[in-house]
Image 1 (spheres, helix red, strand yellow):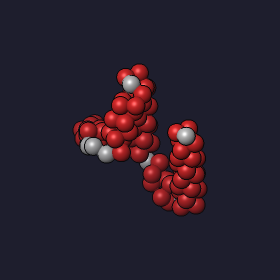
Image 2 (cartoon, rainbow, N blue to C red):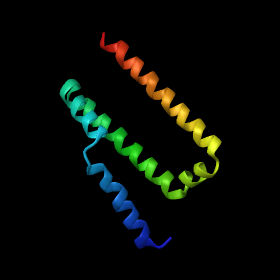
Image 3 (cartoon, rainbow, N blue to C red):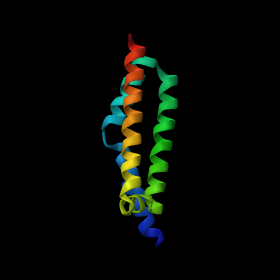
Length: 95
């Protein structure tokens, strides 16, 4: 892949970090509730997760998962179960 195509791709994907969305809401709520130290760790985690997702997308893991739909469905259900587990854990910690 030519360097200019890769740089364009990286710029477009990186610009998604600037669009307000659930991640920005998470960062704002953490900063209000837990303070500055928690936000630095959260920002590092969010940034690292975005870079990993961008690299996996760049090397074609999305295309691979699209062609092997059973594996893709497995990862979707594992992700859904993880989010439910996180939600239950957060719900229990609040009370």
